[in-house]
Image (cartoon, rainbow, N blue to C red; front, side, top):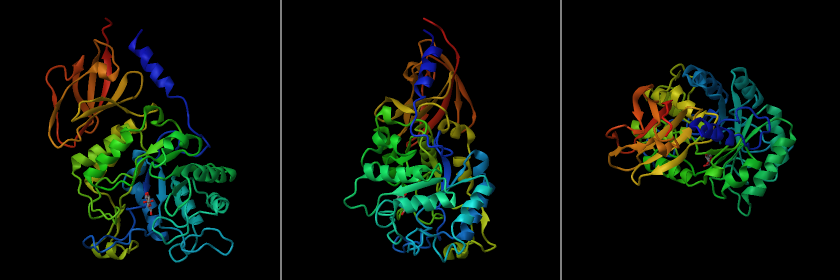
Length: 436
Ligand code: GLA
């Protein structure tokens, strides 16, 4: 039986689905941007000086929608714009409905949503299942599920993320199921992203309720934390790894966030370029939603500290490193493959091989070295499920160039070095096969 036959079985096995409620960008992992650490005033000093991280207002949001295009996210395929825990007024309106912060959004939320739509983006809002949102100053949705779902639908919202703070005595599964019903009762197709940090194994019950869910705790831009998220995600059994309309969300990409980001749970980013590449590579091959959180507006230091985003000093920009990390279409194609999420296929102890079938003749492979020492890697092509006698043309997806041709093992002779914390993200294309 040919290799191609087995490959197509793998592709067909992928056709089972989660809950398709018609919401856009749910069949494949969503690609987007979140305001969470991307919109606040800059953190001007040492850790003791708490930043105002949960800021957003009409001007900064509209400018960020424009910047989404200007920095190249849209052209690279990103489509979703999300406002996190920053937008809601501290009080519900007289009828009990959530309302946008009256000072920051004097015209309400609807014109903002319309603006994002007019620029070809879907628009998401944050809420929380408990009494308050996680920053603790805004109302949560507890006791108001029908009203909140109705108001999101009325504003034209496409995605709702529901957090899990201030939920004493509540259970995730029935709670999220109830909100899912409320959302779907509005008749607007809304992608539901649950955020209980993987506590109650949402991958086992989530596909009936939501289109994506946080599989792990909050991700911050420290290498130890990126490694932790990858470990936790790897432990999810393969049958729950994700499928169309049902995605394990590894949390926002912190790529290149050093001091220019407002906040990351009190952590200033310290990751190297190699580590950030590992972050993107592993999120991509494990089919996590890729939600970037980084400022899209770069202002003078004073304006950034003051949160003066409408000042002339603010320009749409991300750093050259962020462009390299976020806009590489070959890397993004690994995340957007219409196939089962990647999985761990071989654990060598210090380093590991993950692979994801990309199509009839292509397999994406991540050689992941979480250890603190350089390793020298080589692997039988049979590790990828390929038959004996296979040959491959191997492409380096970060460099976007052909790396080498190989027969039976990679590399055919010798080994390739993988630096500490580095991930080689490669694509193996079958070039011929020798049936034995
Ligand atoms: C929690 C979530 C984060 C973010 C904040 C907002 O920590 O996990 O993703 O939404 O709350 O307060």
